[in-house]
Length: 97
Image 1: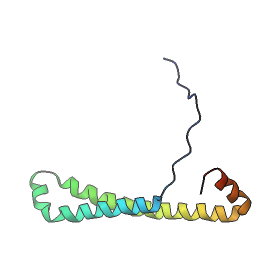
Image 2: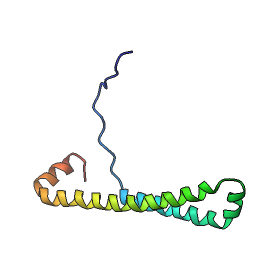
Image 3: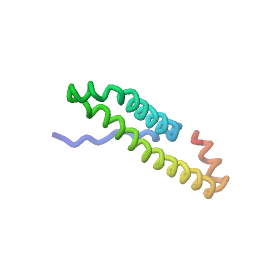
Image 4: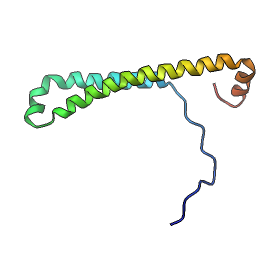
């Protein structure tokens, strides 16, 4: 079996509202936890309590994710300011914000 090598360059990474996306996902996980909490007895009777704890773990990991992406976003903005207007204009000409 031969090793596969790419024939073209990888596309640019997609950038979007990362902080808003992670925050929304974290809120969704926590809301799912709260919605399932009143039915804890049913989940316990059927051996599905892991569903509740999975939602809580998702919310907790989401909080770590929010902290991480906010720091990343701030570092990207700091780097753009430190680079100065010369690099910023070249980024804009390439279609990058």
